[in-house]
Length: 134
Image (cartoon, rainbow, N blue to C red; front, side, top):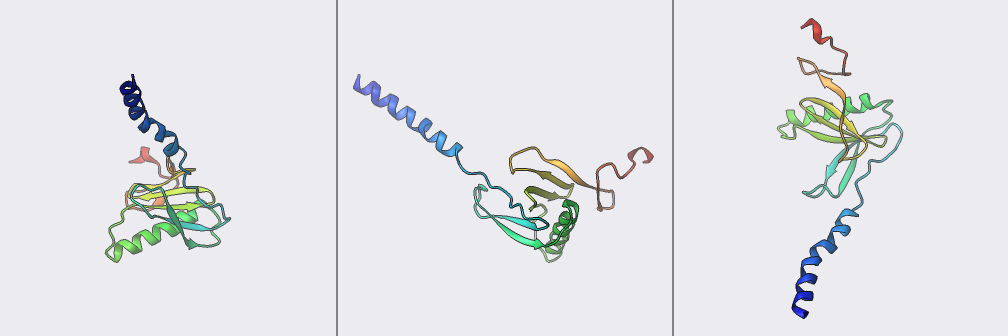
C-alpha cells in the first residue's frame, strides 16, 4: 500500500507544478499616451521583456508603426538580421515583419492587420489598394 501511495505521489508532482506555471504574469505593454516602444525579450522563452522608447508624441498607431519600420529598415541596412520586430503603443503590441504590421492586446492573442504591404513594399491601411484592378 505504501508503494502505491508513493508511486501516486511521484506521478502527481508534475501536475502540482502546472498551476504555478499557468500563473506566470503575462507581459503587458505600457499605456503611455503617444509613446512608441520597441520590445526586447530578455530570455529565450519570452517571459521577460524590456520596453525601449523609440518615439514620443506619436498621434496614432500608424505613426508608431512608421517609426518602428524606419528603425527596422535602418538596422537591416547596417547588417542586422532581425526581419521581424515587436513594438508597443498605448497598451497594444505591434508585430512588424515582411508582410506588414499586425496588432494585438497581448503577445498570445489573435493578431489583426493594422498595415499591409503593397507590391513595392510600402505600408498602407488594409483595403487602401484596389485588388480588383490588378
